[in-house]
Image (cartoon, rainbow, N blue to C red; front, side, top):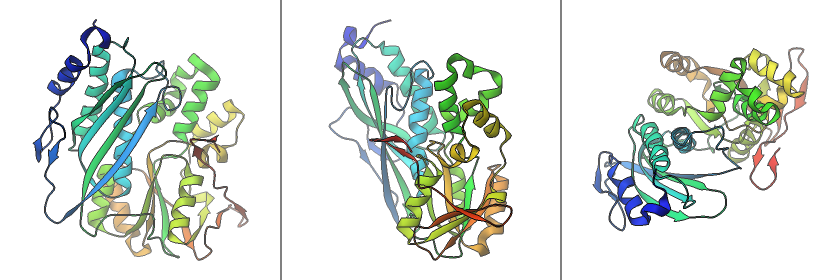
Length: 338
């Protein structure tokens, strides 16, 4: 298999471009100095970017190139889901070692492209550079939203309901199990947790359907953990929140992982974890219609709390009616897991 060094930059870029299929409304694709795309009338562009760094965000021993590409797509797709935007065009940038096999880079792009195409998006360009240390892969994803209909973190109001998709904490548990157990984490019992960590699914379809149904007043994606991301939403909206512990999704597997890791379920559930689920503020009158949309799409959606008038105060109410503070902890790139 030829390496990047064997083929050289120009040939590698040619092969990457030849393997791509530009999405609709792409006027000029890769191969020029810049891509040209055409947005639909009456829409705003929504732009996000994410970078995965070897040894920090991914471990090559746990992710094949195609799976890494898919995971990179999910990180960006989840941001657009949190804004209720339709994914359209992507730019892939990579810092890779010259000794990397060219086919593995093409595999990464294939995994990325397949994940984007499932949501109606595609790659229209990017950049390639050589590194000697850890490799990194960055994606810029451009989406569209009907003008005035984009979700933000700023709209939650006292009395709005807090809803969450999926079972947050699973990705963090999978990552911790891999670090603690090594190959033992590949045991069948842990497969669902590893899948959430290694192959997350962004909630784009649910977000777009909820956007049509109405009722979502604010949103944020769970890329750092419930405690930290919920704190960001509350700070932006000027509200607090009280979580009903009894309403939180039960997860026996998360409880077993907590025992294996000598950790508390609460720390796994609310602490650092890149689940790419959604936290949503929902008007109480829209609870029923939103639940129907989630059920139709087979996406778990739980109503787990209420936003309050106490700015930035986050609490958890237990089954006995007592309350305790919820720590605003999550992943910090310069500090680590909170």
